[in-house]
Every structure is written in C-alpha cells, then in structure tokens.
Length: 137
Image (cartoon, rainbow, N blue to C red):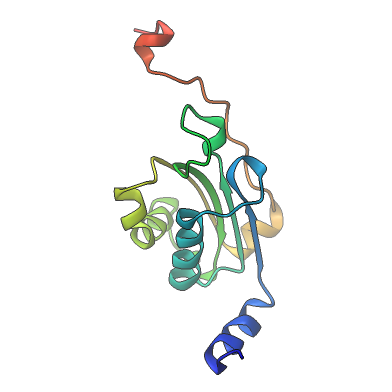
C-alpha cells in the first residue's frame, strides 16, 4: 500500500518529465545515478530532469558510474547566472562529486530556455588515457 506522502509525491511529479539513460544505454540505473536523480529532484523540483550515465564511453570498468551528463530545467534558475545555477547543482550533489563521480556535465536551464532548445547536448568522445600517453605536451 502506498503512503499518503508517496502518493502526493507521485502526483506532483506527474506533470514533469524525468528521463534517464542508464549505463552505456543499458537501461540499468545504478545506485549513484539513483542518488543523483533523487537529490536533484529534492533540491530543485525540476520540470525536466534528463540524466545520462556516460561512463561507458570512458576508460573505466563496465558498469561504472563515474561520468554523467544532466539537463535540469527548473524555475529556481530564474534570474541566476550560469555559474550560480551550476553551484546549486554542485551543492545538491556534493557527496557524489567528492566520491564516485569524476565528471558531471551540466545544462541548467529555465523552463523558457528549455522550450527554445529541449535537447540534452552530446559529449565529445573520450580520448582515453592521459596527455602523456596521447603524446600531447
């Protein structure tokens, strides 16, 4: 049986879009990805939350949760600079950024900005290794 609080939360989320693309497109959502989603939902009450685990495109073991891209659309961003928006996201995810998450690409937009361009940007391919192994000075 669902608690009253859970039912209210589900109804409040009904008007928002929440998409997730699990590890390397597998559709599996791991514990780090789930924590990121929960914390951003609680902190920013987003209208849209798209979260993509891009770890599979990097030199990490299969199933890793180290590299993410997120699009967060929230009215909380109204009147804030991009830096202030990113700080809100970082504050919500401070534990993950201090631990398992190595990279987080953030698109933090207002609802009006999202309506103009409702797309999650693509990340460039990982070159792997360090500059020394790629022959870059």
